[in-house]
Image 1 (cartoon, rainbow, N blue to C red):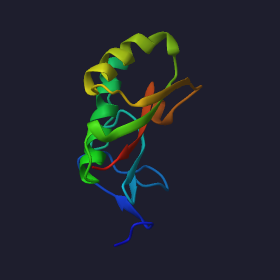
Image 2 (cartoon, helix red, strand yellow):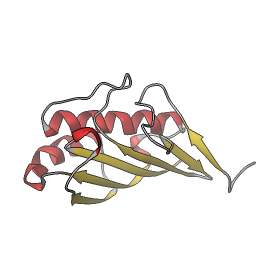
Image 3 (cartoon, one colour):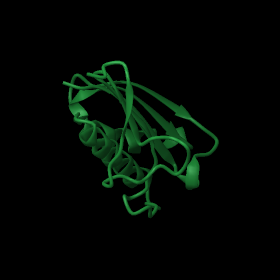
Image 4 (cartoon, rainbow, N blue to C red):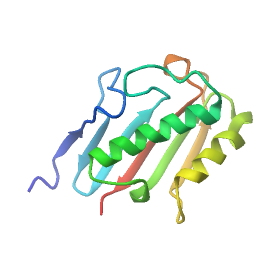
Length: 129
């Protein structure tokens, strides 16, 4: 068994990496999902509200988790990057529907810009069952 070895997690159900990184990395019982922006699996951008963009980001996170053998319930930590924290309630409403208690630890930060002009990006860390 390759307990300590990192292996890439790849799925066609989430957008392919647009740079030198993996959609996800599994190492032992940990699964690290790279930041997901609101791109559909075919690479088209969801140019909608923060709520719509958050839905797509979390859909992508879910698909990478599933490819790595985990679910949203396995997520222990997320980071949400937003270009405007005034829209936090809109993101948070969608986020709250996608996770159940006990909710993952989370940091939310405002950034000046995100790839492809996205308003939201979300990454996740999970512990596989």
